[in-house]
Image (cartoon, rainbow, N blue to C red):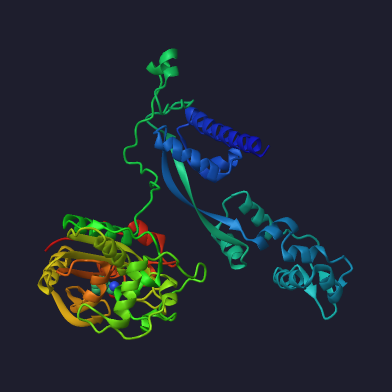
Length: 506
Ligand code: PHE
């Protein structure tokens, strides 16, 4: 029902437009012009806005020529309108006085305060009435309510003289309204009956043969198409894609990172991180309640990890504490993608050795207080190179190559500490825009206490580094609050409008 009603309304509107159009074109057939569209609207009983729409369309098709005319017109205020109906206050005042006169109070009651007040002063001024202490009486037998007459003339759009207008204006009974109207003349394509131009040449036109006489609408090559609704890549994904390409160009293989949940064993123990290490506290790490533990761990390797933590080996004294399997079995949200590297290196240690280059870019979680540069989850980029006899010099060279491709060619290194690397280095890069050295990553050579229990040959060393994806993305896109980049406060506009990302060598 609703749909039928709507289409009937739509049809009525179209039919209404046609009537207005015919009226305009018909009038112009026998007249040179429609001098004032407002007057034409009144005389044909059409709303001017509706008329205006039709005029614009006819003008667009050059069927009529419409010239803008501004027109000033006096119209009645609400007060003026009421006096045009009921008479001016002085008229009402006069009419309410009986021939024998009336007391002020009674008259006031009859007229109401406002009309009494205005009416009395105007009627006295006009010398229509006399007001004594108690009695109000007529001075004239008959008066003409000139104000009411003038107001009615205004309504009928008659011309008044300047003094009359000034009086009404002073009494705030009329105001000037400026309206935009049109003067219409025939256009170059004028016809009495407009033939609707076809937008498409159809099979029916060809079959009927009326394509010969049919007028076709011209292409509007400047019309704007509606914006295309498409998906957009988040800046993090764009930068991630560029970094993936860099790793692939350098011969790295991507590690499978599709498990946010990890056991403490792979996240910490396999990395020679002691069980009392502060990072293993629930203040720093999100532990899972369900399922709280993992049961599947490689038993013989687990034994070697336990041994190296407790007593060392491979030239190390170990941490000399009672290593607990319960602690290693605790499930957590991985705090770094190095958990994935440890699994991959373990797997590599299970086969005859082949050198490998691995990388990953994925999400990690830390129980941190959120501020403008920290979130409880972020993305880590990790690179790992595994070969016989790699040295710190190789690490420096690889980092130089990798970061140069990210557009960071000035690097500095600072000694650092990680439980699983020795030596360890923080990486700083000079930021031309910020004009200072900013920390861009962390790196090192994995310790023998980590690699030997995995079964990797003695002469195999592993160099590795990690950095956040957010840091370079924020620098590249000039975003200074991480919450504008990631999380519920990100504006869709940022994602829709950010430019493509090209990381380049300088
Ligand atoms: N895992 C380290 C971090 O979370 C990064 C790193 C990776 C450091 C590999 C050294 C080697 O910051």
